[in-house]
Amino acid sequence: MIKWFKSGSPWIWLTAGAVSLSLVAVLGLLLLIGYKGLSYFWPAPVYQFDVNLNGKPQVVIGELYQRTMVPVDQLADAGVDVSQFTEDSVPRYLIKTGNRGQGTLDFLTVLSTQIIHQQIANNIAVVDRESNGKFYGYPVSVIEGGEPQPLSQLTVALVQANKVRSELRSLQNNEIANINWHLERLRIEKRRLELRGKLTVADGQRIDREQANYNTIYKNIENRLFALQGQLDTDALVLRDQSGANVTIPMMQVLDMWQPNNLSWLEKVQHWGHQVYKFLSEAPREANTEGGVFPAIFGTVFMVLLMSIMVTPLGVLAAVYLHEYASNNRFTNLIRIAVINLAGVPSIVYGVFGLGFFVYMVGGTIDDVFFSAQLPTPTFGTPGILWSALTLAIMTLPVVIVSTEEGLARIPSSVRNGSLALGATQAETLWRIVLPMASPAIMTGLILAVARAAGEVAPLMLVGVVKMAPTLPLDMHFPYVHLDRKFMHLGFHVYDVAFQSPNVEAARPLVYATSFLLVTVIISLNLTAIAIRNHLREKFRALEQ
Image 1 (tube, rainbow, N blue to C red):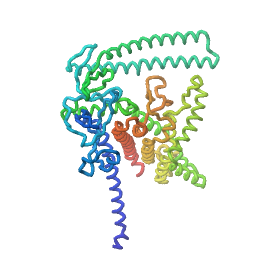
Image 2: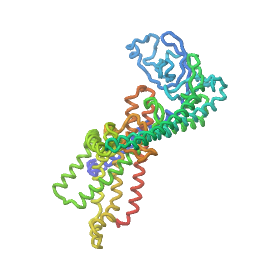
Image 3: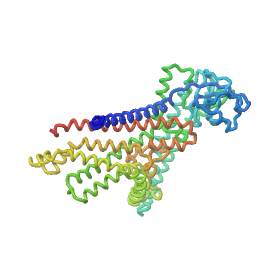
C-alpha cells in the first residue's frame, strides 16, 4: 500500500475522478438548461379543470405548468382546512390560465383536492398576442370588415394580418426612421452653422425648405400607416373563454394561433421549430417576457468581435515589447506582476473605470470637440457599445499578454539567431518568423478573453448595456456602424428577466432558454477561434522544424 501511494497512482486516479465529475456536472447543467429552455417552445397540452375554490365551482382552462408536493402541516399553518387530508403531503398544481387583461390571473394555484374533474380541452386555441401574453379560448368566428365570417377564413385572416403587420414594421423601421434621420441631420447642420456664426439667410431658407419637404413626405407615410392600421381595426377574432363569455381580440393583436391538442407529433415538431425561429429572430416584447432575443444576440456577438479587434493588437504589442525588446530587470518584472494582478481585479471595478475614464472623460471630450452641435444631448459622452468593448478589452488584456508572452518564450533562440544571421532585421524576424510561430498562443489568449468577456454583465451595466435598445448599432445610415449607441446583451437579458420581470412565473422558461442560448453563442465563438488556432498551428508547423 505504501509503495502504491509512493508510485503516485492514487493521485492520478483522484485527478481523473475529479475531472470526470467536473465534466459530468457541466454536461448535466447544460442538459438541464437546454431541456428547461427548449421545452418552453413545445406546444404543451391545454386542460379544462372543474375546480371548487372556496365553495364556488368554476371552470379553469390552461396549461399544467408545475406540480409540487406540499406538506399538510404547511397548509394548516396557512389556514387551510386539512381535516379531509389523509396523506402527509398533497399535490399542488400551478396552472397557466393566461387571458391577462380579462380580469383573471395569469397563473392559478390549486390543490389536487380542489380539482373535481380534469380533461383535455378539445379544439382549444392558444392565441399569441402583441400584448398581455397568451389567450386560451375556443374559436367562435372571424370578423372581416366588420362582418362575421366562418372559422374557415381564419387562416386567410391570419396571413393577411401578418402581411399588414410586416408592412407596418417596414414603414416604421425603414421609411419613417429614414425621414427622422434626415430631419435630425438638418437640425444638427443648422445648429452647427449657428454656433460657428456662419448661418446665412440662404442656408436657413434651404434648410427650412428641406425640412418642409421631409415633413410632407412624413405626412404621406403617416397616412399610409394609418390606412394599414385601419385594415386591421375592422378585423377581429372571437373566442369563448373559460367563463363562457365571447371575447373579441383585434387582429392587430393576434400574432399567431394554434390548437395544441389537435396537432400531430410532426406538426408539434414543426411548431416547435417555428417558435424557436421566432425566438431567435424577433425583438422582445412585454418587458422582455415575450417575443425574441435577436437584438441581444446581435449586441453580444458584435460587442465580443469589437472587443477582440481591440484587445488582440494591444495584448500582442505589449507581450512583444516585454519579451523581445525590454530588458529583463526589476522594472519589467514589476510590470509582469502588475499585469498578472490586473487579471484578478473584480469586473465591476473595470466598469467603474470605464464609466469614469472612457465615458465621462474621453467621451465628454469628443463631444466638446466634434459634436458640440448635438449638446447638451451627448453622443459619445454617454454609455455605448464602444466604451463597453474598450472596458472589456482592458479587463481581458492581461490574459492575452500572458498567453502571447508564453508563446514567444517557447520559440527557440536559435530560430531568431538563424534569421538574423541570414541578414534579416529584428523587425523582419519578428514579423515573418516569431509572430507566425506564436500565433497559436495568441489565439489561445483570444479564446480565453472571449470566454471571459462574452458572459460578463456587471461592467456592462455601467458602460453601455440596456434593458431595451430601440435600434441596432448597425443600419443603412452613414457611418453605418454606430459605436455610440447602447445595446442589448444576452447576459444582462438573463439578469433582467430573472430578477426584474413583472411576471416571474411566465418569464422563468425564458431565463433557461436565454441562458442556453448564451452558452451556445460562447461555445460557437470559442470553437471558431479554436478552428483558426488549429489552422495556424498546422500552417506554421514547418517553421518549428
